[in-house]
Image (tube, rainbow, N blue to C red; front, side, top):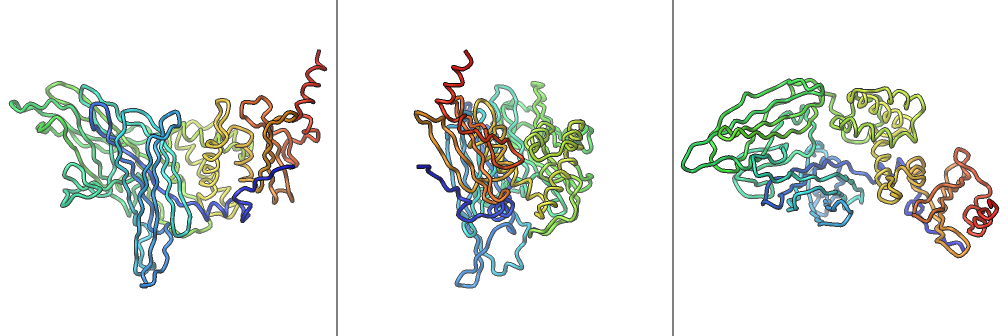
Length: 468
């Protein structure tokens, strides 16, 4: 008897875009690493969410309350879990109409890790609505050196002398991180924090160091700079902080460059971090169907050229030949950002979704494909099952058939609302866990009425013997 496994969406079938809008919560994530010991780094992972993206329930006393949990998981490069954390928060408001929609709730996960490279995943769960947001990223710590070196550069929303110790306390300062490196009229000040390590401190002699910074644009041109300031070295390890208003800069992507020189030894060290200046009209946070798109989507503003190419490569399943041809001829990263902004906007408009929703949902499915279908050295989105997931969404039913004496292992995916009902048959012909599409009843896909012969081991042996 065939055994059917009902997917979670089969319980309450909704179009995939609507489902994404119901369940996805946008979050901002960043991190910075600092020297802890000669063998370990002190790492802070920063998470923020806009107040307007949370769900508030009215309580018996008349106030409104939001309840959400932030989860962090850190893995080594082999996929082994290194550590996991969870923080739960509650927030109350007396009147939701007076709520500041653009106020960010900021969380910080302080962790200790051996110097090295890791993978990490942050997941936010709105415990009121059961909506969630997820962010997967590479976490690469700084490396300890014998000579002068700097920590990662941390952008901050608030930076001042600490009056008391709380979760944002660091080296006598209250350092509230800014995980969203986008600056606009509501957040015009860019504050930064960086630590200097292994300066030539000498208690019996006065040594100095020089510190300066400058801002460059996409073309590498310096658009803002601060002249080197010479300061006395009071310890082997020191902190530098600063800030400036970025709203004098045109809307664009920029890089803040930090430079330090030890005057006595001549050693130099540097670090840098990208940010984006946004001057478009502030949009309401509630979902609205996009009538027009910005020149560059904020989500694309800080992406590198390779990241932009990778995103379009994943999106080629839904791209037209003309779009592929145009993107292939783009050389400038900014041109790629503008192209992708319009590319995703056209899909939002076609599907009547808020600006950015289609892209978020598509890339979320790509990440799911990577987690579930990676095989033979290929990422999950590059496999047949990954492609089908990206193009048509989660199947309504999955029929699984393990290997038997007579049959190869295979699975059948059923889509009830695709052309009145369609099926996709995938088989693991080589036994390496990669299930390839051999038949679909959907007219736009590969059709093979004799697919049962392919999954039959006896048929395969017969075909093999016929060759000799």
